[in-house]
Image (cartoon, rainbow, N blue to C red; front, side):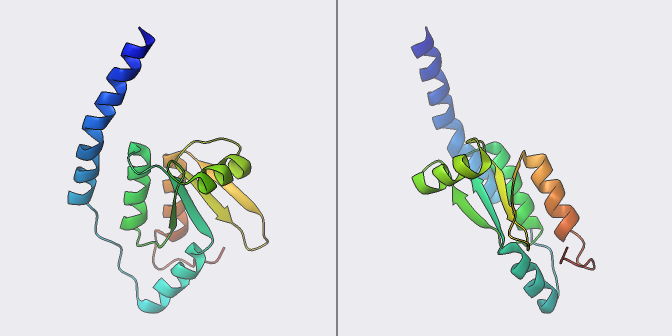
Length: 136
């Protein structure tokens, strides 16, 4: 029975994954506009961020869409297909759960933030207002 259930969900994922990815491509949000100097500051800040994700995870899609909408250049690390990123996520964050945002603070401290809603809230608070200072 367990094999039957597992097979059903694998088949369901195989059917839904292309639909999810196509929908994401077709409805990609437009990036936030910033003046070039402000965008350069944001780009410098986002060099300290990395998103550990799975390509077809709906919560990762939601997070990537927020990153695109905010016009952020966050490194995407595939923790599903890249064993090095998977191991780094496990060692640093303590569990293999995506999405996970790795935040390297200016003092060298590293923070691992799980949950798409928390990540999106953090990014919107930090980078959402183009008039707000980004260095915190």
